[in-house]
Length: 433
Image 1: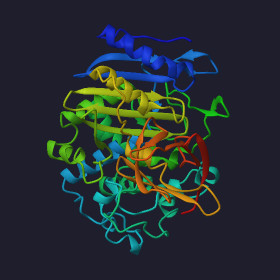
Image 2: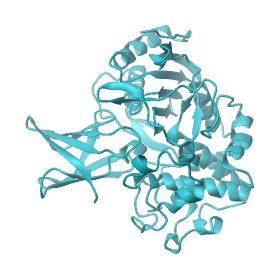
Image 3: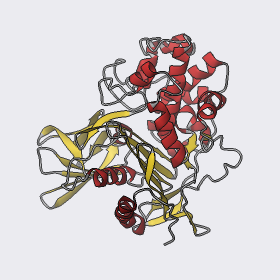
Image 4: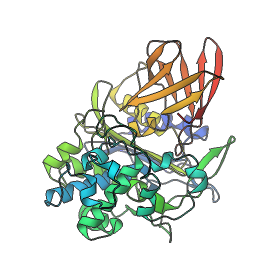
């Protein structure tokens, strides 16, 4: 296996970190770029495994990866810029800036969209979406129409439920108030001012130089990822970037660029569900952590920052559903010297793929819910119980001796779960709740 190595600042950490990542690469669970930085200075910056499997070409540290839901950070920043210009208030109802909003969205505000508390169903959760619509180019208005006739899942502000459609709506607000198309606004007001030359919006047509191809693990073999019309991702998931640019992006926000300090503070505030504006606001190892993951066809990424230690961990994989959050967590544990096994905290965006109902038997239904970064399972034996993450897909009961594994591809909602208890396994397929 060929690895492309750059010169790290801390050889000891870099060597230990590389040894930590190597088993994931050897098992074909991870390939991509990793950047760990302290005070903005790289401790580890290198590629692992193959970028182009057809050409047997290794990753280097400069490759461009689709970001999936990390795109939402740029969309949230655009909304905050427009707020700073006096063009909107976060308390504005969506109908004020999107006149086609249906009547039953009354009460849904921009704040609700930013924090995934709107109650609007996510278009990517529509049954059969990835099977029937993923290859069709749709305009933002057509994407919104996919779920606008569905009833709200809960009153605005009452719950947290991850919603890609909310950020499609926010993209339309950016366009309407700025007079620019969303990709051009992000380029002119965020990327160019910050010098993020390796970051851009993927339109689908044309070639993105140095953008690595995406793969997935299917039936035990790595194969090219299924095609996705990038117009469907839009302001919720169509931006690509590099590890270096993501570090620069995180540090720009910490320095109150390209939005002011008050806006940054609102972005990184916990608004009640362990979530700010496109950032998870959590605690890991007893330390504050700002984190968000992204999953899109062929790619799995995570950007994690421990603000009180100024430690950044960026893991970019071009394998769909790669355990990037497990790798990022273990790298941070290595840096902090955490040796004992501790609870792993996952980003709320990943947990959203597991929420739903699963049939374990003719009359036995298991329901999975989330509260921000916490996962709960309702069972007929024990009622509602919290489950703690072991890795990106596996959870154990906090108070009961159960282990649950979710079968998910990192893009669609989990199709199945496996419950392990008392040496036995039960399998449950997702059903309509």
